[in-house]
Image (tube, rainbow, N blue to C red):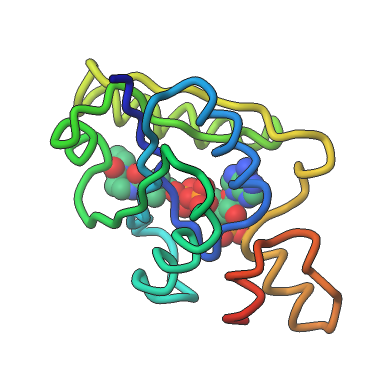
Length: 153
Ligand code: COA
């Protein structure tokens, strides 16, 4: 069984993340969406809320599980027998960050490889912080996030 981990802060999950997840789910038998800790960020939603929002948004997807972990993503992947980590790329500016992340992951465990999906054209501008900012200014963000996020904003 081919298992992959899709790690991220998911603070909150967006339709951009869900698009990457749906496309990756066609390749792997099981994907675990992992709410992980990015030490460079202050969280907006609690880990529990982020996990709940993802669970609700993926309840119709049979090969998706959701979990959280506060250690290294590659250590979690090894525990779960996963062979790949999934990430999305929205723009060239994402590349440098992802390249460094991939290199650090490779240093920690070279047997776990990363797979990157290009964000689709209409989703390249979406980010969790942009969603919060637009929402705070009264813009309808319902086309950009799942219902589970709208409920909690
Ligand atoms: N659609 C929409 N938004 C996207 C996106 C997509 N396809 N891809 C990325 N983003 C946005 C997110 O909304 C988020 O926006 P924000 O900065 O405005 O909040 C940003 O891009 C990146 O967030 P995300 O992909 O959710 O997570 P991250 O880059 O913060 O995640 C971890 C990094 C958690 C995966 C990484 O820090 C990690 O693995 N941590 C665990 C410890 C570890 O193993 N570290 C690595 C070795 S040092």
